[in-house]
Length: 307
Image (cartoon, rainbow, N blue to C red; front, top):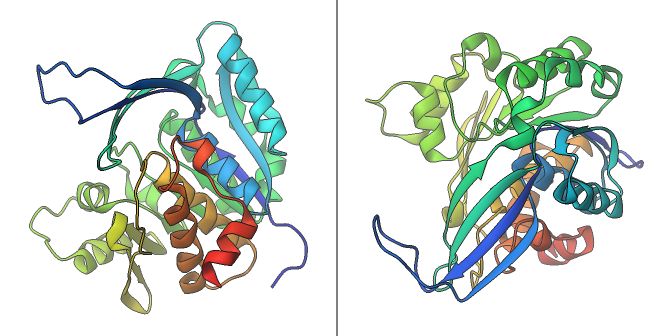
């Protein structure tokens, strides 16, 4: 185990989340009266960066926010969590990305609408400016809420430098074998894994994971929500049960919490199986609280949950 804090670079999105809580999520054409509305920090990249920082990593974030009030609030929040924002660009032409999130008060499930804003302008040049930070990191973390060209650039920089990478392929889109070969650990949910594998006849998750590995991915970790996760690597497929949660408040950001926590554990030198358990415990804590970043736990909380 490494004694120093691990260094993680996250390339991705930053959003302001407008969260609306309702008795149930509306069906098409249905109007539902909301019981409350709040504005909190979110975005898959930012969530994963904050999760990693709160769990003990030194985090560098590569992103764009609008030169507006939401952007100022995001930068202040990153700095409060100790995140290095040297590569977070203020975009004067686009607003800060915004997500409208509906949360079912009974189940904690959500529906999300995202307006990309400045996230859609994260460029190859933005990433290249952070190439030295990526090349010297313990691990790189990416998602797909910013342009694919930027993500591919980051993965190539990390791969060339021998830096392992985690890709959370969400929102899902087709990925070429050339990109997948750059990924050390792919962390899709079940639906994303099925779409990326491109094998509609495959029903078994283990087969889907192997199909993705055949395209060049080193390790596939399919997240299954409360049912846990399935790990597929050179040792075969292993199922990890979910951590029992007595009361689910809000699942927003739980997957990002899992990814950020996984990155910390792997960067610390924990084996993949221990890393999955650590990530599952962190995500289980996050669903007991409202909001994306407000729900993300600190290291002492996760350590206590693991006993």
